[in-house]
Image (cartoon, rainbow, N blue to C red):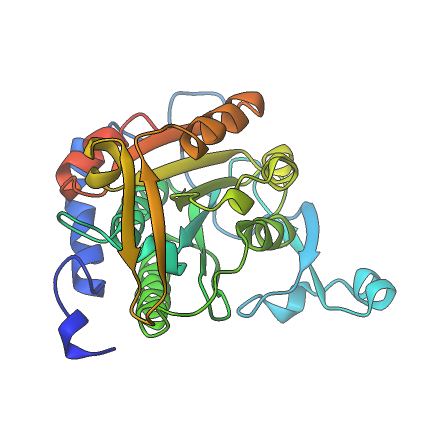
Length: 295
């Protein structure tokens, strides 16, 4: 990454994301499942649990002791069993770092705001005793962090976010893969019932894939963090020419509804929860806006 991009709001640093933990005080206490035992105290039991919850594709970092021999033999590809306590809470944080997210006109790039929002939710999940996983996708191979709990889990997720974002900045001119590829991967890697938080602008018409969004939401409850730049919401309607670093360009039409109305319609049809977030919001205001999210 060039030195010109190593600026607050453009570069993503682990120190900044780690500091967001302090804003948990601005968010309401997370809700935990009721304890299985009588009484008002929720306690934590050690261990992975004994009941198999699901079988999914193997991803780097999985425990090889959980490889399912039967599913692996049938498919020819590694599969693992997932086991959990009935009170286990697992959340996948999906960060869209494609080239369309790497711009902004105010405080930060949309991609940086997406990482901040996901980090705030991640800290809230581990504070509730849950586990967090990461799927950060852009032009290169996606960065995947398997589910982990406590501070160690969030440190791993933050490292993955920083690594994926810097790789994305190094490939600003790379073609964008469709969002449906990431949605399909998330559906394959997470056990049924996990919570999934997707931070994206969903700009491209191909991103509005009803089938891919619906299939993922049917397997795992999905919440969309719709990241917007202030220019998108406040600019006068009209056609705005733009030019890219590689000499290409085009015309962007602003203030005419269009794709934004389509996004709302799809999310409403599938009953997918969504939160509109302005990338110009400082982290403390973002924490307030995310306070109601059900994790």
